[in-house]
Length: 435
Image (cartoon, rainbow, N blue to C red; front, side):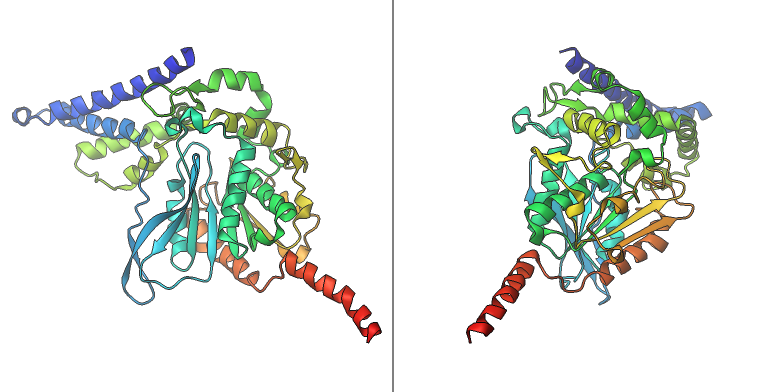
């Protein structure tokens, strides 16, 4: 119960700050106070406006905000996210474009489950939807999932990806962004052994920790330094009574957010101070640069505790993917089994989350894949966010990824077809001899 009480205490603090902001804004905007020409009143209203919005966003799931876009025919087409597969911990959604013919490229964008919603990839989706059929893994906030839904760890995550890939079929091109890269690679290897015909056509891994020890960062150092007992004791709590997931063990979003902000506290403090002054001067707007960034950055979700703990233990501490020792339901997932899925890695030289070297390590694990089906790209000057959503993505990386997809979209003989051809080849000489 003490962990549940701690969860409720954090929510109480958040709610109180939101209320204080709303109160300050309402009091300072009282018409009668306009008679007092004191800048402190305008400042209090600005502080209240920024504070209320800041703490309100922490428990709100952002909208995708992709309503329509103009196609090549010069007409605006409505975009609607439709659920293709619904699961307790996450859905597979498709961005349907009304009135547009089906695009030849079918892309599965695997979003991270690392504290933020899949909407963090909004700009990535926008850049791909223009000429691709885009599907996204939309992970759910663990606080809203009843305990009766069971656990969710790295193996469950991998099996979710396997199911999504099977649903979309072998002509799919998978792009995994950051945290899911190792597990997406494992899911592809799982299919290579269990259901070869369901493997995707290509796999692009962007800034993921395939081998965390290849290039240590502050994140990997923390994972190596802390013990699993310390993590479970200090980071995991039980969802409070307000939400449907009451009693579920989670790594709370609010706790994650405090860690995110602490990493660059001076930068964030300056950003909010400047925004308050802009609001006070009447220079801010609803969707200005500050609000667009922080509306997404502050919207955090709870992560299942078993997923968080197993990620740290198996991906970062024991490096099971890097050592090709990952197992799912007791079965060894051999990455060397991947033989006909083209794989590309993308890294940024200034990535301080998943440093250069961590992701490209995947190519050495693909012992069964010809070198002609392997590719890598290191983007100069790009940070972690830039390699999938920033200027570097739009101008350089996206064209390279689409070219890679197109160059590996030719006809591919499935495993069953290969087996049939092999059987026919064996039978042919006998038939000739008999004749």
